[in-house]
Length: 280
Image (cartoon, rainbow, N blue to C red; front, side):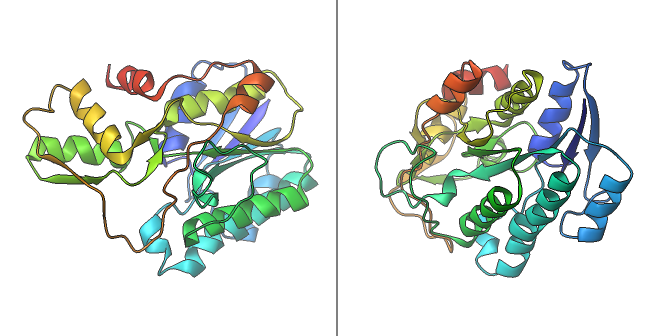
């Protein structure tokens, strides 16, 4: 079983690389942007010409939600056109594509957890570009999984988890919104969720939600990080019901993960428990 991982230097790519040690039966090719730039059809073509892959896990993405509002062309080039390149070559080479998407394909107006069948309506360029990527996969591929996830964090890269710990260490004021509710998701858990699909050799293709269990505001998430690291009392944490951003965000984007759990018979951790696992 040969597996291509794009975006190998990103946080999810690195988490998959860590998890790969538990799957010696798989042959992984971790491709960073230097080896594989999905924005270039030629780059994608070259790597498929020189290798035969059973699976392609696409973790390469433009993820700067704020910057995407003023850099729409690049966001769509990576999150949509790049995905189209991968989908086309996966179809040609009988490779199953696993595409990572986002809760930001929803507008947050439902007010209860989103299922895979709910209508999409992105509020920002990032969400719209990821949704276009989803559409390309569905139009082009027959063997595919689209995994929508939310509020991804890990020990790698620059993310909310990293920012909270850094601000606490430096004693900086950390003002966090209470007006967005979702589910913090440990990228290590997502990595295991992806490899579980491959390990059982499932053919139950389609769209799946995957996040940790429960829900929180960004303020709740920050507070829990500080509680679990014994820094809450000495930290400079403040809450706000309004936080100015360029990109509109869904006020409620919790994902219903029952389809993933039932299809693959895989337990999903509560977000606080998963955070504790990472910290320990």
